[in-house]
Length: 213
Image (cartoon, rainbow, N blue to C red; front, side):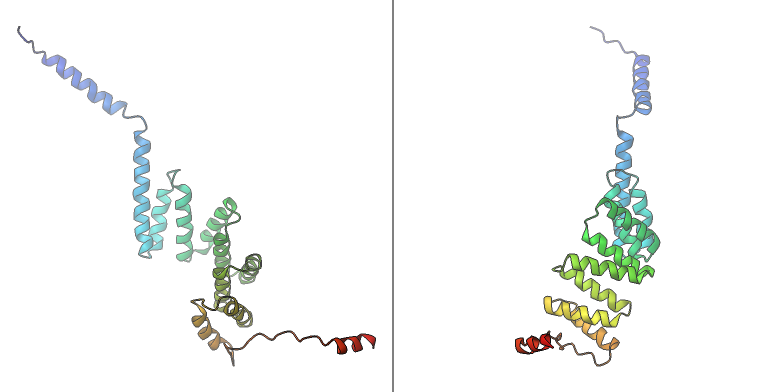
């Protein structure tokens, strides 16, 4: 049996599949490409972040955030980059956004208080830290950061008071030695071994006599 060869048919078939591939594409292909690009941008940004080139990291994190699936985790990295780059206004805005989504997150609240202090809103920052510690009295990291903030903004007396609290509650804290040196430079006659004054014991007889007067 003879086999017939139709070059025109083959050419037409090839042209059809070529046009179909170019015109129709694979369903979801563009979305996959955008996601892959976003992942690449995030990887590049992480590299800049690790090398402390925060301005470049910010640039690429913004590009990575175009992908909805990566938006929130990358936004957190963007907020950290703003803070570490000392871009306080966008850092404040970013952490407020994150805190609105996760209002019970202590780390976000702590970071926000720190940013306020660095931005110049010192009194508000100190009040935020004090409130946070009062609500979480067993949080060593929170108390440590509070002491560090008080030292950094020059509140020596408040820092000293909370330094002794930190030393009493967490005697193995890794920052105590550094805080001791800094407070020694800030406060005249600073004594790191001084203990807080104990409240005077009541004398029943004396108290009874004074009440009768």
